[in-house]
Image (cartoon, rainbow, N blue to C red; front, side, top):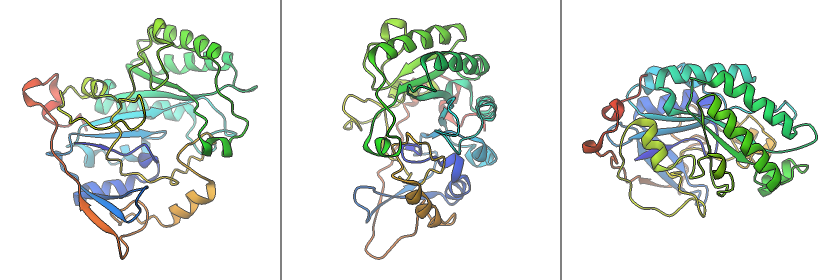
Length: 317
């Protein structure tokens, strides 16, 4: 099975100690955001966890525990965007984030680390030319450290609109203008540009519009074939494998104004105050009335169809 950590929060950046404790104790628990008394217990064993997926703006804290991850295959999405503290008040400086991605790439391999330039939005400050120049600067510095970049345009979720009311949708003309530039810059620096759930309008520029975490993407990243049972899509039209997430909404302390996963700064601070590094749950503890169920975990790896050296084990940690 594939274990996700990054659709609801940033575990490498803020909860590395907790996650490593879970790895060492061999299990983790996750409370359902839709049925709060239902808790799923996952065994953390490479025999049944084929891949751990991370999505982070700061991998550095978890890299300090590289030995604990040594036996697991990994796929990393590292978001590096050029916005200022007016938008991303607690993210690392761009240069530090680039250095962390490069260090991670040297450990797990550049195919297993995707740069995310996400989300793209347009304001009077963050113009088309701003994005053109920023993307080129970053792509040049990341060349050789990654082979893929995922680009997406801002979605106006209710939480996003409440926390960043000045945002507007990126127009079709702006999308095309940036897509053309991103694709050309990517080719120049050996980086394949991808989009996810953005339609096919950028495909003529050579952008891969099939998704950012599809089965094919993950197989290419780790050099394995997976036999994954059919499941319903997390979002209509999305083929990404986003299930089995152990994160919790309202726990990411980057406090990005466009974030869909945080309702408010106050909600994040409340949850972070309830975090216990020794608990099997990211937030709080098991309470009376909770129902704990064991996850159904089986390996998806097709040993007879290995694509590369890593299919039989971990990825360089």
